[in-house]
Length: 304
Image 1: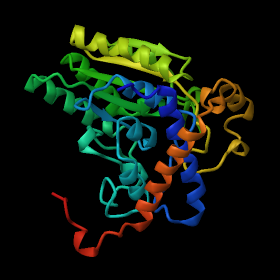
Image 2: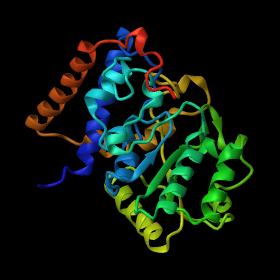
Image 3: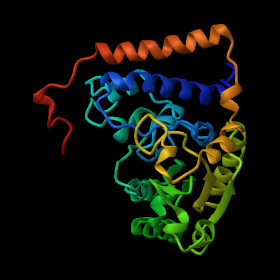
Image 4: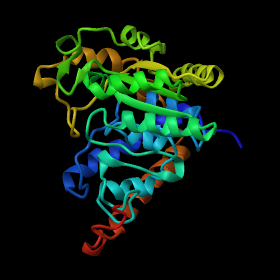
């Protein structure tokens, strides 16, 4: 069976989030949103070389990674709506997605909090002697947190099978990197004896996928962790569905420069494929709308 082109996977994710933007004003989505629009190629490229058993930890801006890792779109939409049929039974929402069936290991609204979790999973994999790879994705703002430094040091010291992926948009919410970091990220990571990889041209998911395959090969062959920086640009506001160029922390020309290289914008699906994709999305929306909300008796279910 022929694999779906990676550009289609990126287009699919964008169409899903565009539908979410349409739904959001109706208040059927019961969660704050951090949209992945503009960053789909990173998620698709990172996940393309992963097997189902490989474990992926990401940030609260996780829609693209959840879908690229193979997460169920119907459970995804239901989770955004706070429904019992969601991937976290309606208790997680957009910022706390998880799906153990595809080893999408969970996200958190707390910046940098999934980094030590990912390191713990990699340590467990090494102790158990299995071949699972751990990939941990976070924003460049997470490198401001002390736990980031502790985690990459521990991973390097114990030669763990983990790949740290920094999505570098140069921002921590509205604060630029120049205002908060006195060090160069890649140079600093290499000081922990981590092999570093940097890719600035990340518009194409195929380019990102090829780049990441080399990283994964290094980790598996050398049995050491790796650190990756992927340049990116988020199109929408930090949280929400609108543009925010009026806020004064970034300029529209920066968006235009990135958008003009975006292959998703001009990629045309066949009428049949477009219709099939939109049906898939609308079926997921209907599934979410038709699903029931959790009941009070389930409040403490699955809480240990």
